[in-house]
Image 1 (cartoon, rainbow, N blue to C red):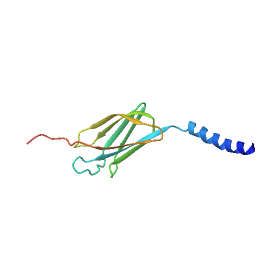
Image 2: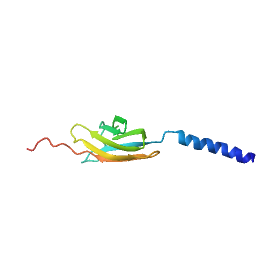
Image 3: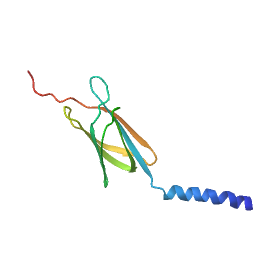
Image 4: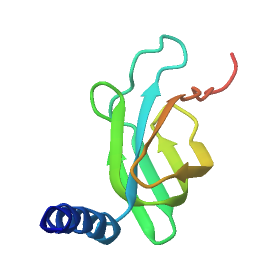
Length: 113
């Protein structure tokens, strides 16, 4: 009986901690050049959801990550001079998961000659 109690106490502690921890996920995005597939540094990425707003720029490898996002539906905007703004909607984030998105921006056309 004492063995059973010693096994149940740690199990109960672990299960309690699992339910008390915030159940969050993350979004990881990479932005690539449409012609060369090279990463684009400095792209402004804005992530919006229910009561959540995150803004960050992509790094030298074209990546950005937003962690500790509550599970739910998000909208992601990508902005960079010389490229058309891109918006993704209905991006689903699940607790304990990372949603990975790799996208290419479309170049703006500055008139025809």
